[in-house]
Image (cartoon, rainbow, N blue to C red):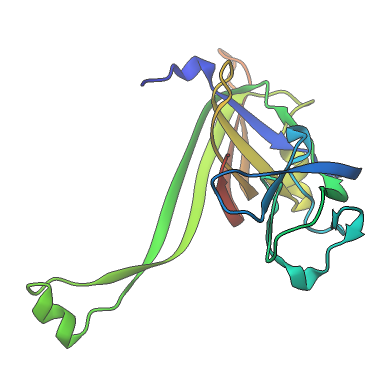
Length: 211
């Protein structure tokens, strides 16, 4: 299946987060019996710098009973099965479409380490053996300059920014979502054209495929 580029959208997260209280979490079928995702998808971008508490039938779940929290997709994985409804209280970031964007690209790369040994060379017919270590995303957003939607505030404040890829706005066909740091923000003006803006970024922290 192919997708028309004109259907794509890029969303960015707000700088400040909003509190949510006692939001329902739904059990995720097919990914284990202890994985829960927030029901209201507009609140799935948890603020990891604010306190978040999960409840089992109204009783707070201890940190020691939580396996992990996937902050940018609104998911919690518990260590044990639960006795009642799972809810959450915390803070979330809203997202909005970058209206001025015309182009977008993101490159996901993996660092690798050479783990070749004398023994592996013999079994691999003399070829090297490598192992993936760290993953990262880098890319750029380009378009028409709009001072009301510019990403300059993130750049000058040194703030991290949530970036969400959407490849088909009608079907919500989505790509990755991740936190990033703005590395450069360039405005370009020419007497024969309109002002444009080009932003480059690099990811910081986990990168998630949207579910």
